[in-house]
Image (cartoon, rainbow, N blue to C red; front, side):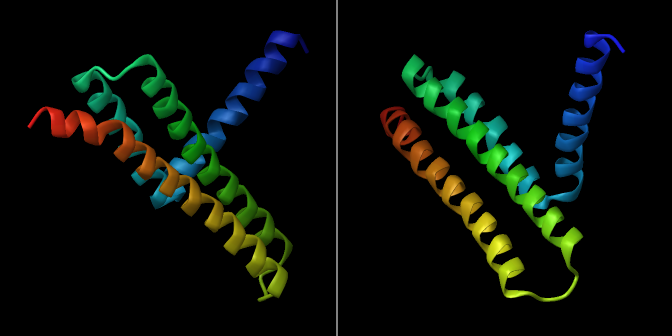
Length: 121
């Protein structure tokens, strides 16, 4: 198999993972909504290059955190269907990771967009 074909197959599998997360995780859809809203606001208020860097980084961080959470939950579910303290810890910690990154996104959004919003009133 050629290297190009291998890379194409790998890319397809990665895209399948994004599609799976979108189809099965309601919170991923919420994160995507705000991920699309932030650039609209950024273009409207003509945010700086540094602000764009933060917005793009935070969007990526939140989406990746949600996908890692989904992966961890799937692996835990694959291992056991019974309640186990360690399974609960793994799932709770990964959900906490998403909560922290989403909170960081909200705070970053406030720090970036609130001055523009207040300046346009």
